[in-house]
Amino acid sequence: MDALQNIRLFQELIRCGDNIYTWCYDVDGALLHSNCPDEGVLNTAFTLFGCKDRMLERGRRSRLPVSVGASIGLIWIAAFEKEGEELLRCWAIGPVFYHDISMRSVEDGLREFRSLEISISWKSQFIRILRAVPVVQSTLTSRYAVMLHHCLTGERLHPSDLDAEADIPHLPDVPQAARDRHRVWMAEQALLQMVRTGDLNYKQALSNSMAVSAGVPVDSPDALRQGKVSVIVFASIVCRAAIEGGLSPEEAYGLGDRYIQTAESARTMDDLMSLAPMLYDDFIRRVHKCRTNPKLSAQIQRCCDYIEMHLGQKIRASDLAILVGYTEYYLTHKFKAEVGVSVNDYVKFAKVERAKILLKSTDLTVQDISDQLSFGTRNYFSRVFQDVAGCTPVQYREERSLH
Image (cartoon, rainbow, N blue to C red; front, side):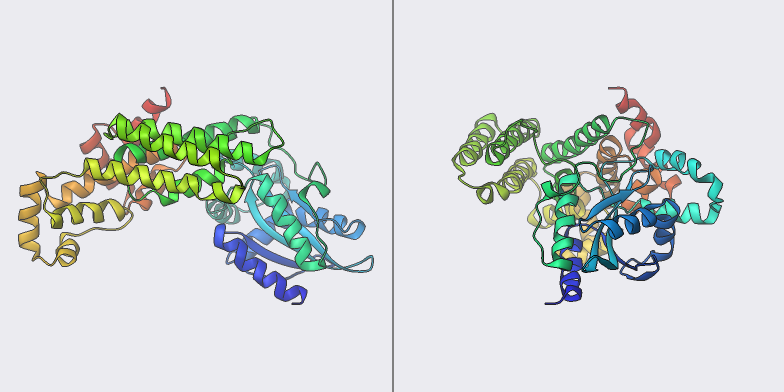
């Protein structure tokens, strides 16, 4: 395959995991093409923050890929297509964040560019777009850089061949280690709460957590040993959360011991790769099963499971009736008789419980959470939350942040 075909394949591969776009510039910095729907705003940012000029300067003097970024925390990865020593085109992927950045930090960081006369309209669009920019660990972006370089040149590099210090200005506010550890803690709380409740709709939370942390940091050159430690620690905390969720200690510790032994027996990283998601799914399903009310009929239990799995959608009794083959009238009466509350109230309670997890474990705004759970408006979300939890979403978040 030629370089362009390689790039197209590379685009598809990286977008399977993260929402990362690809950009191509000529030697004068003109954008030739990209696959970004917000091309105009992000290309302007790439230029305004000086990233494009630094990319071009690097491409003229070096063959190695580079990371370029701005003090607000945005990062692009660039690699170069050359003929001999002559630069032909610059290819970039991004933007991404290396670590979690609050929108307030971004707005504060934009003030240093006030001399560029950034319009209010552009700034508003830019902030909106940034909410969807993924956080990608530096170890992964280094791999993306050498993969992009290989697509363009056929040359194989190792991440250690890249510059030790990328061209990335650092944010002056909170130390990166503190931001990373806080974000890991928040993601961990969401994972453990889902174990305690037997929440089958866990996959996005697990994916987010794995994007935040590669596991327990072990000062060892042995990657297999580090992988084993990470799985063992993960199995231990999930096991305890499962007990808190109602799984018997005998079953939980026995299951945890089996996964720990499997991890210890692993001979390769491939043996470990699927172990953490497998054990997490196993514990979740066991907790869900033990929390399932044996007094519920199969049809009503199916409705409850459907509600838990579709909290991001508007859920109507008529939809549930179709699901189990009942009339809406019969379903609503049977549901209340077995569960003790109406379908609408059960949906509200379930959504508020999910909102509590998001308030405790993420930096999502109240509006974002309202949108994610399909409440319609923030006011309605706040009213329902207060009716169920006895306080507003803001009060709940503030109270939990003190503990």
